[in-house]
Image (cartoon, rainbow, N blue to C red):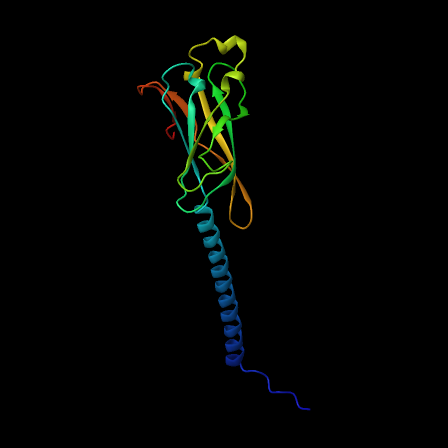
Length: 188
């Protein structure tokens, strides 16, 4: 059987160009698929329920005995199995280490044992005074030197049960407001 005639330079260049074009096309399609998957993941993460925290006014007693409110900000999705922890992150000039403790007296809306529907809120208190030892417990300015934050753990009703842990912004006792209350720390 006779051998086929060798390819001309032009034919070889055309084959090389077609192979390169196929490689570029495959790379472009791969990037599109990766971009689409990343976009879907970003949208799904953006739609997750998020929590916002606020403090009720301090009218009497210790600033650590204030009732806090947590709200589900998501307009579409509920969250369930909410567990709130209070974290005493920092007390200036005390040498205390950050300490986490479970929230007390958590009160969910009627009908929900441990979850929040869209736009619903619950109240809770933080037992910070039990964390603070005797040497500085009598210090009236300890709350003004403290920074706290909250950790919420909850299930999202998507794809079965997906557990999310979310930390709030830092809060400090704002005595410039009347009556005083814990407010989120402005970004640095």
